[in-house]
Image 1 (spheres, rainbow, N blue to C red):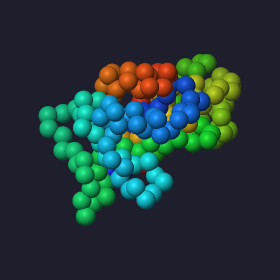
Image 2 (tube, one colour):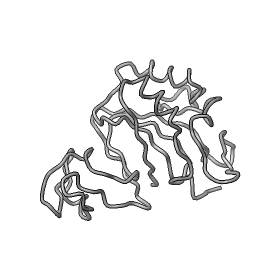
Image 3 (cartoon, one colour):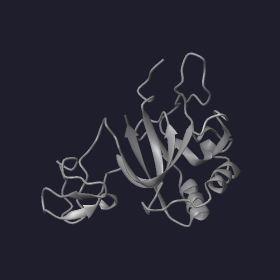
Image 4 (cartoon, one colour):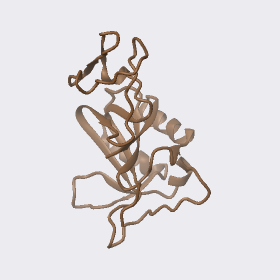
Length: 186
């Protein structure tokens, strides 16, 4: 069964795009300790996919009267809410393919409509003021993120759910850097 949510995710990223956890297993253990994640979905895989933890709903607030959230996979549908943790060797830009918006330049604050054509691996040339800025400095309006470390919460349509401040504070305590969030649909 496909839904509008199966290709959308909520992402949490460090506010410093170059932050990388030195002890990845310690980071995972801390997420387990706060009840955000539970068991690994496939213990034979190198993927870092986890079922949601016992306190997940204390950390993520769903909007609306009675959202229908599937937390466990069933044999007919692989789409369910779970947590993927991605860490890369170089910063990546994850951009929403659906419902995308032009990022705003950090210099002139105007939308950069041709950003993808004016992008290098680390910067974008603004087609308005003609300045080069780091990808991480652009205002992506919560529809993209640039980082080394991503916490992806699957099957969340943009603005259907939001991280609670308690989760952002706990992530900051664990890592020593502030955290932000965005949405992306493939």
